[in-house]
Amino acid sequence: MIHRYLCRRFSQGAKLDTNSKLRTVISYKGIKPASKINFSNDLSTPLIQKIRTPFTMSNLLNEKITSFKGFILPNGYPNTTKSKYLSYFAHITTSATLTSFMNCLTNQALFVVLGNMSTGMAFVSSAALTWVLKDGIGYFAGVALAKRFGEWLSEDIKKWRLLGLAFFGVGYLLELLTFPFPTHFLLLAGIANSVKSVCYMALSGSCTYINFHFAAANNIADVAGKCSTQGMLGTTLGYVLGLGVSLIINITSLKVLVPIIACGTALNFAIATISLRNIEIPYLNYHKLDLVTDHYIKSDQILSPQSMLKEELTWGMISTSRNIIVGSKQVQNTVKDLSQPQITEILNLFGQEKFICVPSKEGKLQICYTKDVSKQEVIVGYLLAAKIQENMKKGFSLCVAANYVLQEYSKSKREQFIDQLHAVGWKTDHVYVPFDKYTYESVQTYASN
Image 1 (tube, rainbow, N blue to C red):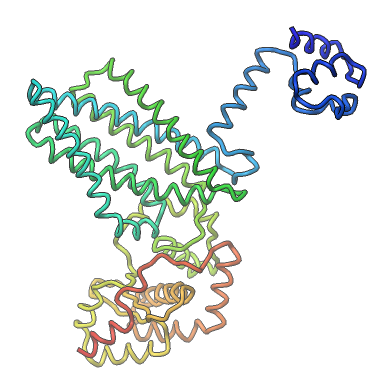
Image 2: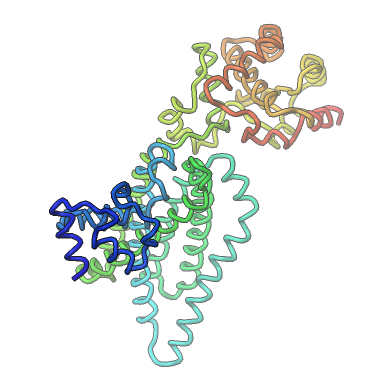
């Protein structure tokens, strides 16, 4: 009664003042002490506005949509996140949906395989133990690879996120191999779970950095929490979709399941690629150093992190074949292949530098840094190595090419290169190449032996 009366009064243009009956009503509801309310000047409060809003289906729908956004988007969106966040939200939700959809189908297929192997109570206990062992193998593999994989993940977040999504599909396909080889169920399912555990590590690790990137109002906890909510929303949708599809298709047919898993993985990969093109990572790694130095040598200009977004997501980012190799163990064999005069000439040439370049038989250039090298000197050294290699392709020997480059790039020109990197948005306090392995001092040791 009171609600209908208030709505009718406001819809008729009623004004609240200290003598209005509404003052008594609202005071009776205990919302605010009546003696402190100036209704004639306080009609913009959320309570009054809510009462004055006419009840329509459109207003009700808008209210529910706003409430739903509060569950899945950070508080204050879009003012508390960086641009392109909505694209990332769509990727997270879609990725979780596709992943859980494929997981639902493959899990049902695994249960069918277990069900066909035997029957009876003894089988139930055996099947339960097998399932637990399968999961345990996957978790153990994830723990065993955590240290090394953490180093790889830091080097290139985008690459490992894409590879994680791709190999998730490989894990699902390995699980489907239990159909033709049911006697090797534990082996195949254990390997598949190991692959998926490592992939999950890659996805969760990259997600942490991406959440940090989008948090624009010191709200990393809120952004990370909403990312989990978005993942749970996608997971729920995926299982609902998977259960629905499993009622239509033949869950025991590889001819049906394999194309579904392959298409789901490809779609997941494509959506992730589009989404990652909106995320700037202002730190240099192997692939970005190649792109930046190559562009600089050709045009004397620096690619910015923004202009790098489309350039970096190519097959080159996952390639292990590089013309410049940093801190590789191969340098030991390379030094052994050189004559003593060649080694002496190279050591004398780079004696005042923080790095040394050694040529290999395959035409690649190996670069090693001193132990006390700074991050900026690592970047400059990589640029000079790239320039040396370009001159070597023109027919010059290493020493001739290096002597020319070291004279061309004086201290001021090297500092200018670093300043240009900073000017376009790159950060040089970290560089993700293995410069601290097989150092300059190692080369000197190999040469002396």
